[in-house]
Length: 92
Image 1 (tube, helix red, strand yellow):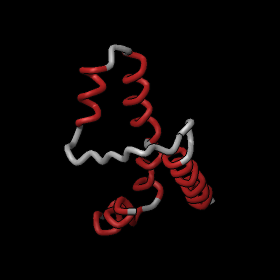
Image 2: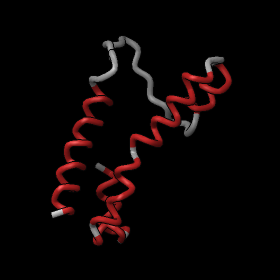
Image 3: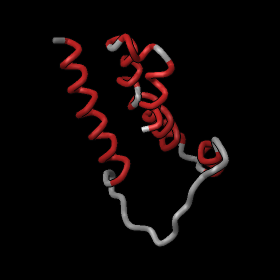
């Protein structure tokens, strides 16, 4: 029963995260599209170009906290402890 509830929670939580990612928090259509191919560029810019500590601390800590529920997948579902099952999930 616990596994089933956790599975339902993860599905709902993932749906909510996808909504926030693509539609939430006042997203407006931009004419300019940017893609970052260099790892950690945005984090570096936040620390060097933005003087507001609250802005980047909330951003980075929020990103870590928001994905904590996914860390329990391997504990609840034994198959997900193996890399061959876990890798396709991260690709999605």
